[in-house]
Image 1 (cartoon, rainbow, N blue to C red):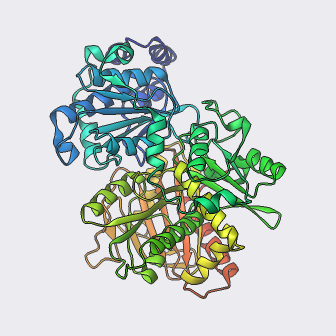
Image 2 (cartoon, helix red, strand yellow; image 1 turned 90 degrees about the vertical axis):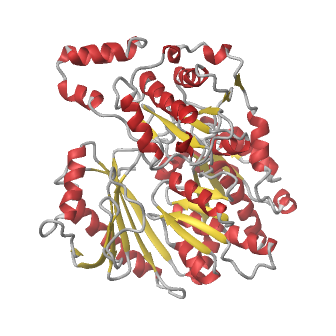
Image 3 (cartoon, rainbow, N blue to C red; image 1 turned 180 degrees about the vertical axis):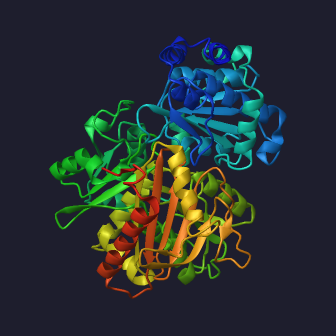
Length: 592
C-alpha cells in the first residue's frame, strides 16, 4: 500500500506512466517495480540517460521536473555550485530527440521562479548549448537528448556557467538535493508557461550557428572552393543536416551530398539497426552506397544530436572507416600544423595544449613529446575535458584540440564540448588541402605514424543488463589471488602496472594513489603489460555495456605494423576471455 501511495502521488499528471505502474502491480512484478522505483538515475559521462517510462530510475515528466527544480534551486540559492557568482540567472534549453512535454516542463520549472529562459523553437545540435551558455552570458544550460542511444531512451544534460557539463562535486550535490526535495512545485506542471510567459524567448539558432562557425579555422577558403573532392553526409535521422550544410557554406566548401533517407529527424531511426555511426561500416551502408553512386570519396556521418562524427574514405576501391583514435591523429596533426603556420614566431609551445580522455589513444602524447606542447589526460567523458579546458584557460593556456575515442572531437575551444558539425567541416577542409598534395587522409595517417610512431588500438564492448554480474566481474579482478590482490598476468602476458580509478589505486605511482579523480560509482581498471600494451576495462556511463580498450604504442620508425596488430589482437582476446568471461557471465558480444 505504501508503494501504491507513492506512485499514485508521483504520476498524478501522467496517466500513461501511472498505468505502467498499475499494470506491474497487478501482475505482481516486484522485481521490475524495485528496478524502477528503488533506485534513481545518476549522472554518467553524458548526464542523466535512461529509457523513457514510469519510475524514478527512468526518464519521465516527474524525473525531468525534479532534476530541473534542483538545478533551479542551485542557480537561485546556491551560486557556490557554479564555482563563481552567476552573471545572469538565465536558463537555456535545447532539444534534439524530443518529447515536447519534457521541454515544456523543463521550461515551466524555470519560468515559475521568474528565471528568463532561452528556448530554441527548432531542433539544434548539442554543441549549441555550451556555446550559447558562454555567448549569452547564461548561468546554465539544459539539453534534452538521448544522443545515439536506442529509440526507447532519452536524456538530460546540464551545463554550468563555464559552458562545460557538470561534474563532481556538482552532479553529486544535485542528486542529493533531488532526494531531499522530491515533491514538484505547483507551477512545475504548468506546460502553458512555455508559450505564455514573457520571460521565454528564442535565441535565433541561425544567428547563433553563424557566430559559432565564425570562430572556426576555415583557413583555405579559396582552396576549398576549387576542390574536386565530393563528400556525402548522413545525419543519422538526427538534427545535423541543415547545420552541416551551413558549415560547409561558411568554409566555402562544395555542399555535401545528403543521404535522403536519413537527413530529417526521425526518433524511430527507421533505416539503421543502431543510431550510432561509431558502429562502423554496417550502419553506414546507405552512405557508402550513395557515395559509390555519386563518385564521392569521403563519407561524413554525424550522430543524431550531431556532437559526434564518423569518417570513411575510399582507398584502393575499398572503404576505410576511421576509428576515433585514427581521426584524432589526423585532426591533432592538422590543428597543430595550422597553429604553427599562424604563429611562426612561437618558439615555446608550453602555452599550447591538447587533451584526451585516458581510454583514448596516446597519439597526442607522442605529438607533445616531440613538438613540445602541453598534453593532459582526463577521465572518460567530455564533461571532464570541458572543465579541464576552463581550468587551463584561466592559466593562460590555449587549447587547440581535444578528443575522446568514441568519435568525439573538439577543434578549437570556442565550444568546450565535442562538436560533430564543425569537425565535419574541418575534416573536409583538411582533405581538400591534402588532395592538393596528392595525399589522402589514410596516406597522411601513415605519414603521422612514421613520424610519431604507430599507435594501433582496439575498442569494443560486451553488453550486460545485470548490475550484480558487473560488480562480480570487477570484484574478481580486485581479489584475484586473495583479498585486495590484482592479477599479475593475463594468460601468458605479464602485467607490470595496474590503475584502478574506482578505488584510487595506481601501482605505478610512488604512493600507489591515482593521479586522476576517483570514480566510485563506475568501474574502470587499466592494465599496462610488459610489452607496452595498455588495456582498460570500464563500464559505460550511458549504456549497459562493459567497454574494453587496448593500444600498442610503438616508437617512430617501426614499420612492421602487422606484427603489432597480431600481438594486440592476442592480448585483447585474452583480456576479454580471461577477465570478462563472456560465456560464463552470459554477456552479449558485440554483433554489429
